[in-house]
Image 1 (cartoon, helix red, strand yellow):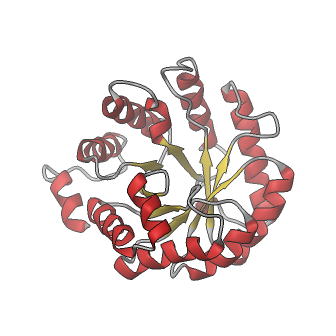
Image 2 (cartoon, helix red, strand yellow):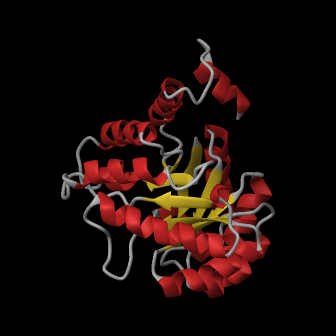
Amino acid sequence: MILIGERVNAGFKDIKEAIINKNGDVIKEWARKQTDAGATYIDVNLGTASNKPEDLCWMIEKVQEEVDTPISIDNNKPVMLKEAIPVCKKPPLVNSTTAVEEKMNELLPIIAEHGASFIGLVMDEAGSPKNADKRVENAGKIFAKAFEFELSPEQIFLDPIIMPLKFMQEQASEILSAANQFKLFSDPPCHIVCGLSNISNGTKYKKLINRTFLTMLIANGCDAAIMDVMDSDLVDAVLTAELIMNKQIYADGYIGAFRKSR
């Protein structure tokens, strides 16, 4: 499972203050904590703290001073990406584009030039789809456009767009159905990713809902998540779900083995 650590994000007060005050120690601390917890990528999100490419580059540099974990650049502005991607020591994951033709034509050439990967949100000019069929249709557009730029399935992460369970409960089954169909686009399949915390937005039992929904997504082909990697129960549920899906070899100490490998 590809675990994308969500915590180096200006949506969190300490990260926003660190960006404004140029306190690199806070960025480094969260990069280290998430890497030690098993993160495959560190998501770096400048948010509303700044709109300057140099600030995004600074965040990436601080993460890379502390850990070797690849970067997920949480920004889809070409002017930002043209400066930020070359700063990355390893090919990054770019988050994200949509199925809008103009947007894909702006971003995918930059991604292809640098050998990066990208997250494709299966939304279009009309916004987020309301059913699985429209999600699959938009995913197909993203997949086909990526192939035009000679991007491989390994570089494509399709996001079925998770909606809050509390407010759009009927969407959960549509998301699962769409994810299940994404894996049929190619052999080997592309990646299927989710922004997990959206499912529990506004709910009381956030951790339980996140844990349950992610295991259900894994059963339907999901192999990547932007998530709280510091939630050990969530990570343990991921490991167990992958074991049940025969994606890992069983051993009594499989959880401990994962921890030791990090």
